Length: 124
Image (cartoon, rainbow, N blue to C red; front, side, top):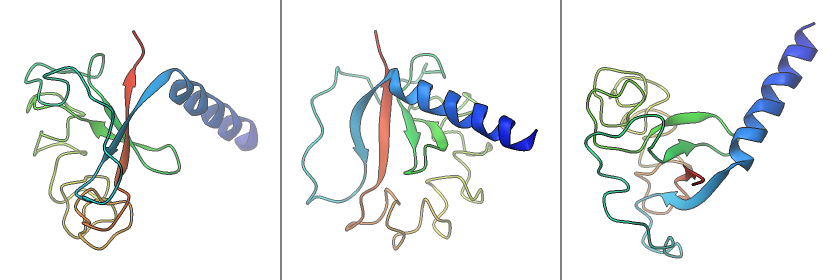
C-alpha cells in the first residue's frame, strides 16, 4: 500500500511540474545564463498567492515556496513566520544554515557559485 501511495505522489508531482513553465533559476550566481525576460511584477507582487505566483522547486521536485512579496501568503518566501520564509525552517531559502539557504549549499539561491533553485510559473 505504501508503494502505491508513493507512486501516486510521484506521479502527481511530475504532472504538476509538466504543466508549469520554467522561468529560470533563483540564484545569486552571476555566471549562469540569464533567465528569459518576465513581465513586470512577476516576482515582487505584494498580492501574490499560490494561484498566481512563480514557485520554487529543488532538484527532486520538492516545493520550496511561492516567489512573491506577500508577507501574508502562507507559502511565500517573504513570510517570515511560515515554513518557506522563516530563517529557522529547514525548507526555507532564507535559512542561512539550512540546505536551501546556506551560502555553501549547491542548490542554495544564496551561493554565488551554485545553481540555485528552479522557478516555475503556471501556464496561461
